[in-house]
Amino acid sequence: MNKEQVFERILGRCSVEKEVLEKEFNELLVKTKEKISDETNAQQAAALRLYTLYKQQIASPAKKYEGYILFATDTSDFGAAKKYAEIKKAWDNAADDYKEEMIAQGIVDSEGNPLWKTTNFKNGQKIIPEENLARTVFLLAKDKEEPGELKLSTLVLRGEKAKEKLPRLVKVDFRANPNKDKSTEEMTVLNQSVVTKFTPTSPEDRIDPKEVAMKYLGKHIINTLAELRAWHDANENDFNRLCIIKGMASIKPTKPGISQLIEIEDGTLPIDVPLPVWCPRDYEIDFEDGAPDVIVIGKTNVRDDKLMVNAYGVYAPEEWRVKDSPKEITEETEEEDNEFDG
Image (cartoon, rainbow, N blue to C red; front, side, top):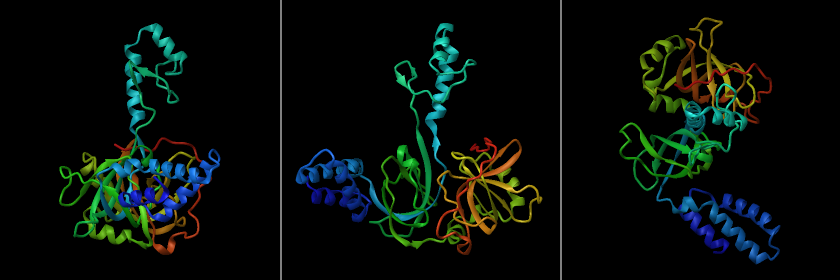
């Protein structure tokens, strides 16, 4: 296939703009010319390499969707949890001489605690996965071929897609398959995906999170922070509990690799006990420290009798947003394992 044929096939099946394909093709062409000097052959090879990148999406029976990404959970590594459990089981069942071998190989420490840098440990013939990443994305979306309005939707991204930065609050095109068995009148559940790509179509077409909260998520709004603990206690058995709160946000520095931390207060909590809010690692804090009326959408958790929120989305009023560059947090604090999602 030549470049034109590859472009035609990708554009017909995938949610991607031609300008994006041109950029990707040119980058591949530069790399290909390092190995193939003939221009015609290099062009064809680069086109085939581009096709390979989109092969899974092209083969997918997914439908074309449009909408807005509202918020998303942080990326979780379910492979790490599985790895820990399987290594612990192997240690508990191992003979003494094999336990010594496990320690020598760096699979566990001297007490049998699994070490996270292990890459080659096998449990029988089954290699324990290095990582199994996933995150849940919440959207307003609809099938482009069907009539009707945008509807609250969820989509779980897995693998490398769970690491990618998401274009929040702007109009996007993407491909997905609805899960009719799990969908409800209130929420469309889209099947999990390792290939879904969100392509912004109108960067200037930005949705207002406050309007979304009022129109679609009104029942999740907590009027004051003082009411939040009682709400959590009443809903703690609901794994999918979702709350919307508002208050003044103070930005707190954290170490690299740790979820970002802000503290919210609204005058209804004790002055020295603000509410800690943990933001996803890839979230860019794009508002000034001390911004008022910041909306937080997330999930409550309690650890050591301390209430906190794992944020899925944090939105400041437009006049408090930093337009040119997101807030950079460079100071380091003592690393605390405060993240918890139970």
